[in-house]
Length: 484
Ligand code: ATP
Picture 1 (cartoon, rainbow, N blue to C red):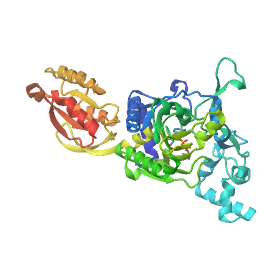
Picture 2 (picture 1 turned 120 degrees about the vertical axis):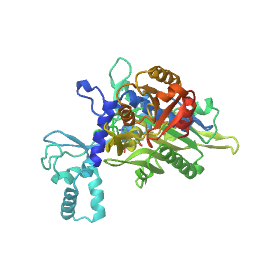
Picture 3 (picture 1 turned 30 degrees about the horizontal axis):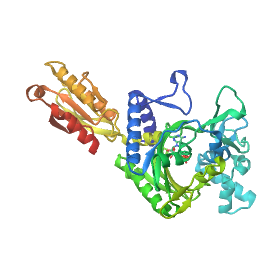
């Protein structure tokens, strides 16, 4: 299957089956925003719940849910007011706007080579120097002087790069003046740092300990392509782990391993995961790795693990005047803790899990005249604990009381899982419909059920069927869904 097709197919399946819709679709959509439909919200909640359990059902990690709006000084202290910017260039002719680095990445190999050679000749620079010259947004006008605008095709029409802050601004209270500006948070981490002392005291925690949070974040991203990968409103799952600075190497490695394992445990294929170690570090970081997933458009970060040192607590101490430090009553040391951050995108992970699960398989088919052929089945091999619907229940035929039994089973199972009842069409068609939305188990009530109470349970991936007594289904399915 061509890679570009996959994203298109998944976007279309996501809409058709109710995973993800375009935001405000009836008005033509709102760029960079998406709505989760009935199946999507279940799957997203399952992902978040799994992360929450994994990260906070531990002695040394506490959870919080901080407000999205925070004191504006938070974003000065964090560096977002000054540094959370992207270099943007505009086409003077068609007014299209591009992120400078992304525009460069998007050049064809031929165009990039030509640009480099021309500049090398003109400026008399060697390979290393020309690379840093090109990367510096201050040189954008010169660098792009021979490049065509991807929108209108005109040549050499770009402005000099300008910094564009990605934070959304709004006003708090009724008066719209500059003293009332607040920002929609661009990350959840700062809500954790400013609550460091509160949580330490309330949870009677000692170092090392962490604070976890799941919540919405907002970034006025310029290029919002690739479905859920880069959106303007998204959700993060972040855990900040506070430690004694002398233990930073050991905790960094620990969390890196824990986080990779979580993705693998939930079905992300190892060959589709990459650990990218940063060479160029952000101003606050001592070490950083990205967990990357092989999306159809290339490798993309799904989670970042960073050693943020004491940068954030120090800055908040400086800006708030409150000492965000720790006193170790055993060693009598007083210090500002270091922070190991694990920062995952819930929505980006959702997209990775969805793509990872998508498959089109050739399967055997029995025709109505008894002959055999093959057909393609579209199936989402979603990990059972993330699957939006855990089981579908079918009466084989709509007579002999099979519907009543199937309804009763559905009601029983619904006390524990999200379950779907379906009595329309051939059973084969019903299986296919469930395969396409990742339902791991399909239960069929047939004539044998009427005599001995057993039903068939068909497993999505192997398509194998076993008979289970209808009264034992809850225990049977619970064990499979949890242990899988
Ligand atoms: P990128 O370089 O892709 O913009 P980033 O390095 O700015 O990402 P972080 O600030 O480290 O990302 O954010 C942590 C996580 O939040 C990312 O790994 C990603 O999963 C998610 N994330 C960040 N920006 C977006 C976005 N615009 N849309 C969806 N998810 C996002």
